[in-house]
Every structure is written in structure tokens, then in C-alpha cells.
Amino acid sequence: MMMMSCEYMKSNIDEKEETKIRLMRALVEKQDPSSKEVDDPTLRRFLRARDLDVEKASGMFLKYLKWRQTFVPNGSISLSEVPNELSQNKMFMQGFDKKGRPIATVLGARHFQNKLGGLEEFKRFVVYILDKICSRIPPGQEKFVVIGDLKGWGYSNSDLRAYLGALSILQDYYPERLGKLFIVHAPYIFMTVWKIVYPFIDNNTKKKIVFVQDKKLKSTLLEEIDESQIPEIYGGQLPLVPIQET
Image (cartoon, rainbow, N blue to C red):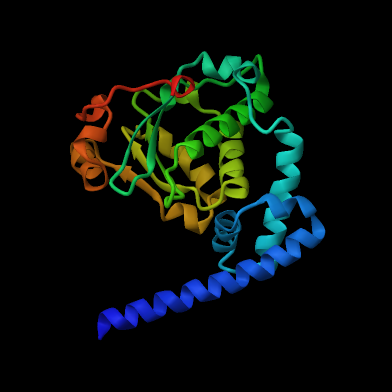
């Protein structure tokens, strides 16, 4: 009886979402004909990010389309557009978790404020990363996992404008893509910056962030990731592969 009840509820939720997707599609296609090229799962992500409010989700989606057309006019960010960020060798991608979500690892202590390319290059780098990760998401899955490693992080790595810029891009233009963020080896001094950033994180994203204790690092990762898919530096079997080489 309980199983039938759960299935019935899920069916109702699915039907409700499908109805709202149709309403949203009619609304956004009327305002921007290029919306016709966008699939239903994409519209669903924006709907879920706005708690199935069609009007709010449509506004968010149309803002995304406009941003994409101006910020990524060629459809993708090339390596030549982010040379200074790539040179820091801080972003890696390798493996999948138990749900089939691709895993990315960022080494926070390797990030320094980009004085050559500035904040705009950093934002391009964030888009390059997110597009790269999303391209590895298998059919039937929509999210990815990130391990944010702050070992060795200090005030010289603190870059609030970059952090807030990355957060804005993730939340505004890649809604419902982040499955989980494991923050590992977080030093005490990082919490000063975290307190400033935290109010800018939306509630949906906050639920996906986990601070992992050093002594429970591997056991925590093993709850979601098979050992064969965990990076070697955390006791797993996969080497870190720079994101531009994947």
C-alpha cells in the first residue's frame, strides 16, 4: 500500500512538472524564439530552481539565454580565452559517483587573484569548467559532484570577487546542476571568508554543501563514491587529471 501511494505521488509530481514545462515553454518561446532549441530537462531544471513557479523560472531562463548569447557567443569557451587561469593547474576531473555523476576536484590553495586576465577571465574559466563537466554527465543524470580541497589555503588565496562571481554563475545559469560539494581540509581561517560568502548561497545550494572532517574524509566519500572512482590523494585509485586534458 505504501509503495503504491509513493508511486501515485511521484506520478502526480511528474504530471504537475510536465504541465508546468508546457506552460513555461509557451511563455519563453513567445518572448525568445530560440527557446525552441532547448530541451525539456533544461526547462525543468530552471523550474525546480524556482520551486515550480512558471513566471519566475521563465524570467530566470530568459535571463540565462541572453547571458549565454553575449558571454559565450561562439557556443563555448576556448583554451585561448583562459590561459592565466589554466596555468594555475587547480581544476581536475576524473571518475563518477555511485549515481553516475561526474566528479571534479578543485585545489583551492592553487588559486590566486588573476591580475593579468582579471575577473572576466576567471568568469570565462568558470563557464569553461562548468560546460566541460556538464558535457560528461551521462544520459539520465543531470548533476555533478565537486570536491573542494582547501589544504594549504591561506589569505593569499582569498579572492572574494572571484568566489562570488563563480557562485553567481553556478546559481543563475547552471541551476540544479550541482549534486554535492564536499569541502575537505578546510582550515580555520577559511571560515572568515565563508561567513561572508554564505549569505549569497541560495537554500537549494546550501543543502548540497558538506564540510568533511579530515579523520572521516575517505569514509564520507565512500558513502557516495566507489573506491575505484575516488582520487588517489584521498585514498582512492584514480589520478587527478587536469580538466583541459579530459
